Length: 357
Image 1 (cartoon, rainbow, N blue to C red):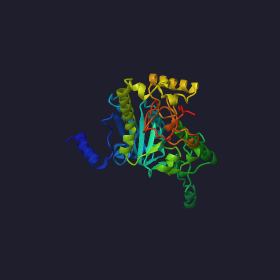
Image 2 (spheres, one colour):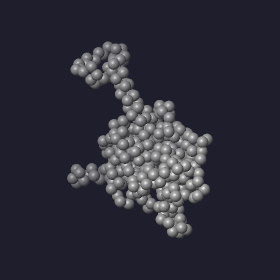
Image 3 (cartoon, rainbow, N blue to C red):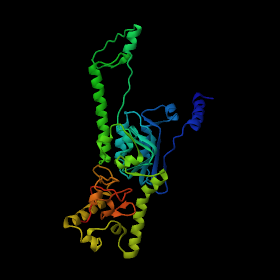
Image 4 (cartoon, rainbow, N blue to C red):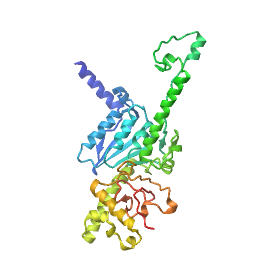
């Protein structure tokens, strides 16, 4: 038996026993599901993957494969991860953010640190009420043995050119300048982490991004996630259901009036019910038609804070003023919107609201 054949068989056996990572698949509704279970890293070995690691390059490749599939209409990530290395995480976050299709992440157990960094960038971010969410921070642990070396009479002789070169090499310890430089680097990474989260979760508070971990129910109140679901199947049904309900409502409207489905699902200001139209100001009527023209030309807005985003949050901070999705002329119950894609909570709000007085 040749060497390659021999170890190919061994790899196959190891896969059966150790590799529990589910493969991406596409649902009958056209949703690409990409499971992500384990600690995140970049350039992982086969053994590291077999024992629970997830290579971020593999996640990126799965995204590319799904985007190349004409049957895929939306992408959902099923995440259970404590995070991982800084290396590769910002790039994965940008890739998720720029997918260009409706996106959703669901966490049944854990979405923390680097995993939250990357997958907070989907349009929707759902979690179980008891899931662990957050840990928005950066940590580096490095051991110094200078005191121990002194006790045993061991002296380290280190020659360097560049005063910051190879800090703490051999456990020598840090100078004050080296220590300040490392802390500044960690602070910079943390700030980038927070800014990335705020790109999509714009109503989240920076005070909640200091390494805290919250149950899903609390994370929803703090706008770190967009909603709650007990299972991935429930989250997937919510994600896919908004499109289905929009199509059904459009079809029903066509049967009743003979108008086009698009016009009935997303009516122009002139097609709103008279009692609603009478409550809108001239500016609001122009806004309705203007938003719909943009949606007609470029497609639905997503829920992010990006250039195509609506800045949607699942829990409106302006409930007392009546600024709720359910009061907006674009709202399509039970959980849909005429111009914003994805699952829409009736108690949510976005920047595109047009609400009568």
